[in-house]
Amino acid sequence: MKLTYYPGCSLHSTAYEYHASTCAVFQALGVELEELADWNCCGATSAHATNHYLSLALPLRNLILAERAGHDIVVPCAACYNALKTADHQIRQHDASAAQVNASLRESLGAAYAAAVNVRHPLEILSRQDMLRAIRAKAVRPLTGLKVVAYYGCLLSRPKDSVAFDNPDHPQSMDKILAALGAEVRRWSYKTDCCGAGLTLPQAAVVEALAGKLAAAAARAGAQAIVAACSMCMMNLDTRQEKAPRQIPVFYFTELMGASFNLPEVKSWLARHIIDPAHLLSLGGH
Image 1 (tube, helix red, strand yellow):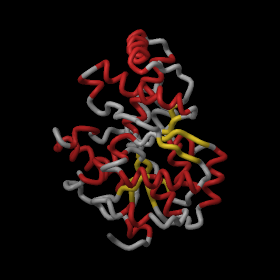
Image 2 (cartoon, rainbow, N blue to C red):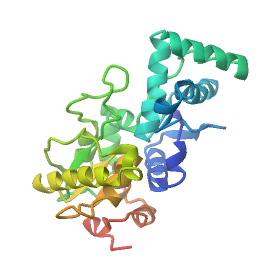
Image 3 (cartoon, one colour):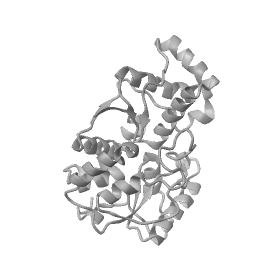
Image 4 (cartoon, helix red, strand yellow):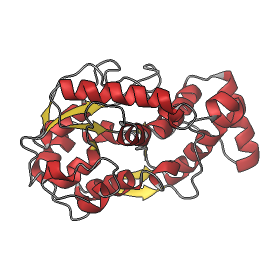
């Protein structure tokens, strides 16, 4: 299987460990990721609120490039996924505004988006039955005894009609992957609650309150760690738990896959975390 890979801005900077772990586990599973050539920022998180044209033109340009590459496009960052998936949905639904932007791109780029590729999140791909079987076979270091909660955030499940690939209120894709790795996935009611998203700098107090609430809920559920699938969620939960009664380490789900696959790069990924999670995997500290 070959997929076009869109990292977005954060995975080449603050969320580099998500980029590295995603590429590593897909390679381990025999899936080829080819990074989209000449990709641009998708507009997250401000374009939708500041410039309607750019909120569509930026993701549509990436989708046009993906069509030229000829493969479905996989997008790990939930904000980027939401932006590209929304633009794709609007074109498929013949939204007049999106069609107008698309026509303008034909004039400037020589091509418009024809909705000939699918926008995928890694969770959607890796939770398929064939991939779950492959994950179980690769899990040479099962995560037995590790108690976790799966945190999807709000951008992978909303709006449900245009974005969600899983149950928007009670998603299970990450739960299935973590269970395949041998982890004990605890039940909780905060899977799709908002972490504060892009408010981490302009409204830090709001994000601290939300991160603290999520950490406390994870602790009540008996979890040792929160597992995320979004670079923005990871950043907020990893850096804004100062006022939480107990700090809960946070992993990207791809990092736990790499640990269970016994990949050698895992320590370098975890060394980038603020709340040290390495002791939970018997890997030692930073």
